[in-house]
Structures are given as C-alpha cells and as structure tokens.
Amino acid sequence: MKHILSVKNPQVKEWKKRLTKKEREKTGTFLVEGFHLVEEAFKAEAIIDLIISEEIDVPSWDYGDIPITIVTKEIIKELSDTETPQGIFALCRQLDYPEILSTAQTFIAIDQVQDPGNMGTIIRTADAAGVDAVIIGEGTVDIYNPKVVRSGQGSHFHLPIVKTNLSAFIDALKERHIPVYGTALENGRNYREIEKTDTFCLILGNEGSGVSKQVLSKTDTNLYIPIHGKSESLNVAVAAGILMYYFK
Amino acid sequence: MKHILSVKNPQVKEWKKRLTKKEREKTGTFLVEGFHLVEEAFKAEAIIDLIISEEIDVPSWDYGDIPITIVTKEIIKELSDTETPQGIFALCRQLDYPEILSTAQTFIAIDQVQDPGNMGTIIRTADAAGVDAVIIGEGTVDIYNPKVVRSGQGSHFHLPIVKTNLSAFIDALKERHIPVYGTALENGRNYREIEKTDTFCLILGNEGSGVSKQVLSKTDTNLYIPIHGKSESLNVAVAAGILMYYFK
Image (cartoon, rainbow over all chains, first blue to last red; front, side, top):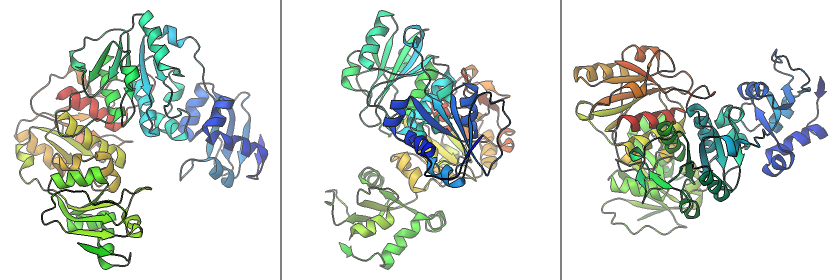
C-alpha cells in the first residue's frame, strides 16, 4: 500500500489527466468516484488502481492484485468532480466488446446527445430495460466524462457501450435484417403503431436538433412519441426510456 | 419604461429575493429567465414585471400594461441562475387552480422528489403526455426553484401544478373513484398487467427512498417497472415518463 502526500506527486498528475477526454481516449482509462461506482468497477474487474483518502476506512473487499494508494484530502479534492467527495476513486480500464456489434440483438444508438446527465441516464435506462448494447455515434458527449459516469450509476460496467460510425453501423444492421428505428418530431409513425420485434435498433438524437438528417435517411422507419399537451418535445432520456420499455 | 443602473436599487433587491423559496412562497411570485420561458409566461398572462438588459433588443410583443424595466449587465448577473444569461427575465405570479383537484381526471403526484432537474423534467413530461394536473406533496423540491423552472421548459405555464397534502388528496380521489397507483421496487404489480382506465393518479417518489410507506399504504395498487438488466433502479423522471405514456 503506497501513501502519497503531495498533490505535486507525478502519480497524482497522471491520474488527474483522466479528467480530460483526450487523455482518457489516449490511455483507454477513466476515473470513477464514490463507493457505489468503485464497487461496480471492482465487480466488473475493471480497476487498475484504487485511490483512497487517508480519512476513510478501506472497504474490506478481496482486492487480489489491485494496487491501493492512500492519499490526502487535498489530493482527493484535486481528482474530484463533486463538491463533497466520498474519498474513494478507481482508475479503470475502458471495457472492450469486439464482437458485440455482430452478436447483439437489441440496440440503442445515440446521435450527438450533448448533456452528460442525459447520456448517463440513457445508459442506466438501457441497462434496466435489458437492451443488449449502447452504440455511441460521433459528436456525442464522451461516455467516460465524470458526470456521465455518475448519472450512469454503475451501468457503464453492466452492458457494452461501443463508439462507432452510425452510418456504417446501420449498414451492418441491415445486412443482419435488424429493424432500425430513427426518432423524429415529424414525418414519422406513432411508436405505438409499430409491432414489437425480437431485434431492433432505436436511434435517439441531439437535445436541440434531434437525429441528424443523414442518419434519419438511412433508417427503416422513423418514430415519434405523440405530444398530447402544449410542450414542444420530451427530454431525450425520457423519450429513450419510453421507447426502450415499449420495445422490450 | 424605467431604467435601473445600480445593483443596489431597492427594486433589484426586491426581485433578487425571489431566488429564495421563502420569498417566493410569501409573495406568490417567481422569476423566469431567458427568451423561451419569458414568452411562455407572456402567453399565459403570468407576467408582473419584465426585466430586460440594456444590451439586448426588446422583443416586439404587444405588452399591454406590463411594466418594462431596462437594467445593466451587472443587474442581470445578480438575478441570473445561469452562467451565460440571455438578458431577459419576467417576474411572474404563481398560477392558481382552485377547482382542479375536484375536476381533473388524470394526475401525476410527487412525493418528495429532491432533484430540480428531475422535477422540471416530470412537469415537462406530464405536459407532453397530456396529464391533467401535477400534484406536489410536502417535502418536494420547490417547483419555482430556477432550475426546476428551466428544466420544465415552459410547461409550468401549460398545466396546473398544485401543492397539497398527499394523504388528504388520496382520500379525495377515492371518493371520486379514481384509481390511485403508487410505485415501488418491490411488492407491487408489473405496470403492464394493469388495464388502462380513463382516470388515474400515478405517484412517484424520492430518488433514494421512493414513495413513502405512509403514502404507499393508502394507494389502490402499487406498480413496479421491471428491471431486466443489472441496474438497481430507473431515474425517477424516466420512470414517470414510461408510466404516464403507458396510461395515457
């Protein structure tokens, strides 16, 4: 068990780099914070380093070979994205799912969602609904952003999340005869008119502009959720939840 | 058209008080911020005072008798809850719906939801789903909190939102033979087994602890949304959306 006292320690600087998307992508790692998320990471065998405040008790898990580092309150503050850190972090590896695009039967695909809370909530809901995989198109918020991870409440470790080009992905689904449903406010079909199938891909889009025209033009059918009242639209995570639970 | 230059002006101090729940309740007023929300407030005839930055153009609406005050960028910052204020506010009256509890047919009731984003999203979704009224139980986040208003995206002006005691409210619904559905992770019925009815009240609860035991004991039936994957629960706003769209 190492003990680091200085925020200037090179190891601390190395961890802190994971607060930027660029470094997370370069290293294929990310930080998770708090007891619940660290425990989920531990169960998923995704932990590279465990970082614990000298002010809290080390949880009594069987850590095996996971290196544990005890750090000061000041270092915890440096690494934290929250106002009241719980004092425990794990440096995790981003899980890899090489076969999933060709084996999964049910997908939710994301086209340029920007809000971290929405993105994390969609991942959490996909997990709950039992969707096989979450597909992340280009221009979407980084799924390893600390706020996305926090809103995901551990679901990052429960189901495959794969970044890919949506256009090529849709082509591959068509070859597998999996129905691809876009979502749009207009010129679509009411989702309740659609007969449920064992396989599907639902595509949700950006908070302001929705699914891009280019993607919508490649889908089999575009769906809308009827608005009965006076609001202009639904929150994207709520829309995703309504559709995933309708189709599953 | 008045022009105020100093942040110390008594009128500015008066407006600023609306950033606290206590003053909002005492005065029956609240502030809304940004073009979209001010326009919704205007259409709902809820505006008492219109406050506009000297740096932006005054929208060309027919204001009638609404007093307009032009203020400095510094005053806008004082009143704003956002990092990049749009430079327009309306002081609004909280709308009143004296008859709604005895006339509405479909309700969503909220028991101690704490997160402003969740609360605003539930109001927005209730509006979209065409639910007749949103009922706010004691211990719930203030619906006129700026973050709740922002997440509500104008739906605060579209449908009745009424604060009341949930226990007494449920008693009144029973007299009207309106089915009351609580939500719980356990010991309930799968919502899909429930036959839809023209009237209903759905009750959603706190993010951590759900609907309180006291309220659950008074409902006709308690529902759960099945979790097919490994996540422990759904976000409360997502759950509310799934249920409202199922029942409407």
